[in-house]
Length: 198
Image (cartoon, rainbow, N blue to C red):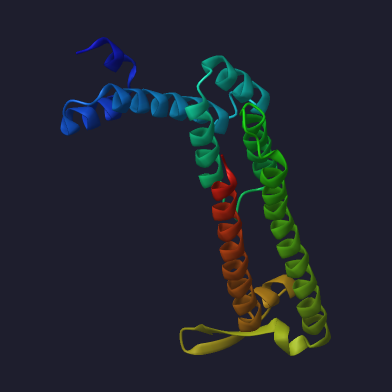
């Protein structure tokens, strides 16, 4: 096995074997991709923070790694990411941006802030809707009653306000619609952000 291949993961070596002989440029791309994978793996596992990620990429001194690392970080974001996770990845993406010769920091930051704002708006709308339905359930005791079939008998179960809300079709429909709408908006911002990277 040639020297440069010894640093690759078994999966990468297997892929190489299937592909056949690579050009020098392709070999470097595979090696660079492995470096990014390794670095981001440490980052995702919390072994390194955004500042350490910045230092390690700066030491590599390869501009080609920067955009790839950013795109992978962006791809790892999801609407369901916790605010802490989103903030950490946001810091990582912005840290990498500062290493580039041609920076687009303000636009990148603007789009990352948009993602954060979407999550906040979603939470606020959910809370507002929940409180509205909660007032309705508290004011109507019939909404807190559920018939339960036990063998031949039908029993009436008393639900807590929270349980009653979760049973309501209007609440489930609202949740489903909200999730879908905001996830789509989040995905659009992600794509726009990737296009803005230089």
